[in-house]
Length: 245
Image 1 (tube, rainbow, N blue to C red):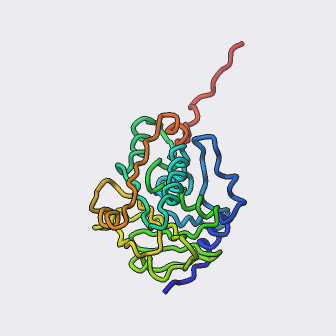
Image 2 (image 1 turned 90 degrees about the horizontal axis):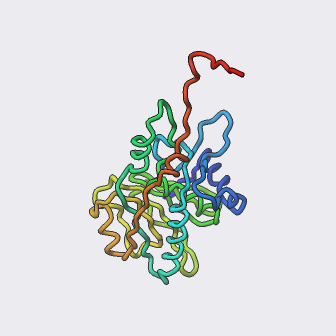
Image 3 (image 1 turned 90 degrees about the vertical axis):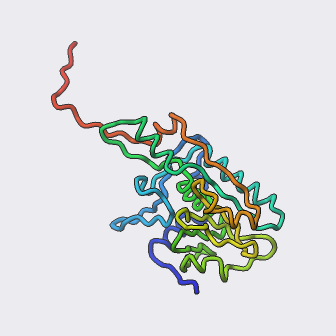
């Protein structure tokens, strides 16, 4: 049974839902995007599978926008088939490159350009288009539907979903890389799954074989994006600097 969610998760949905947020998605890349909402005196609530070092801030690269529109195109071409897509690649590449190339005394990564971070971007992008979204990880499922947030255990995630007229399967971003055998997606489920996975076929091959899902890869950051993705904070000099005329 679905359980109604209130509080921060609901506020997050209300914040991102609808046309008012479209202006936050820019066309000049890369750009920073904060996914949290302003809850003064309360911790931010971001019900998204983001890396711990990034908090709620991510860098949106051009590859993110291209991947989003490519997914829209694939979904349109499915012509009634609930296929979906797997986004794969080596884990942690963006953060690793940042640490290797940018050896500053202190710096703060603003979201590594990876598969998991892309799912966060995908969720807010879809919510801004008033789409029904079912976000899943290895433990829980969160459903954003007609202004209300619901949750249930991940093992029951694909049951009793909203029924739509025509072909409108529920967008289902899945961050379940640790699951042996991958998520239990079946062709009969009324979902359009987008799973982020490391390149281990055992974690997605079962459902991909059943549905014929596309297999896609995320591109790496270039140096310009790495520089944009790190904010430096250098210590003040020990002595004042004398100025000569």
